[in-house]
Length: 239
Image 1 (cartoon, one colour):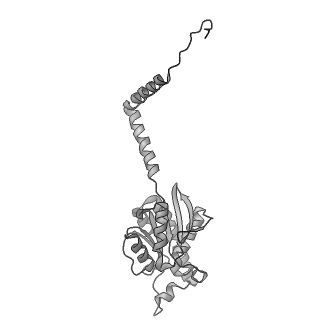
Image 2 (cartoon, one colour; image 1 turned 60 degrees about the vertical axis):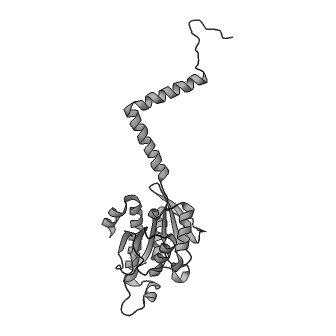
Image 3 (cartoon, rainbow, N blue to C red; image 1 turned 135 degrees about the vertical axis):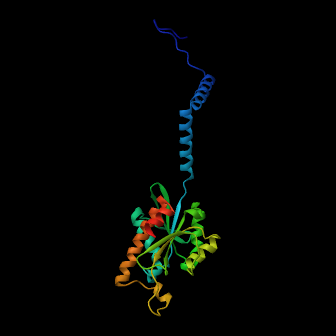
């Protein structure tokens, strides 16, 4: 039995049912206020946007093995390595037929990948990783060497053909679409009658090496810019 202190009234606490009813009435009044309703809708959109965030898969194309390191055909591998340095990725693991590392860029989840199945069969590992991480084609960025672009320069585009590049052909065949981003590292055509295969599988020398490294650095920079600013602005800045 409660005893009432002099000068004080006993406080009656609401029952659980009454508490729920009061809370519902409060929420109803809260949402009926236009300012509160708009703020509620804004918060909801922000939550939905956060929930809709997708992972970017950045696949650099090349061939595994010491004999192919830093060759023109491995421009994709070198660019992904430059991105790993920029994003602070130190741990690499083998999964899905590729070497992968994870990082973040302005809140975006990023998976870096270097397929280890050789250039001509790059599509298998890329498709596997996309399935593993729930990556859609519009969040796939493929970095590769390009004969028809001058050394030291790059181009960025979305979609298109493979122009005889077997790595791109393999990815397109496996995905059943050509609609994904490409960052193309210019290596130029071989001089004179030098066979194309010897050109792409050799390391650039002297001035060519400097231009190659410049293009690799530009490619890494363009990938980061693309994720944050979209295709049009990236093309205006780098193409």
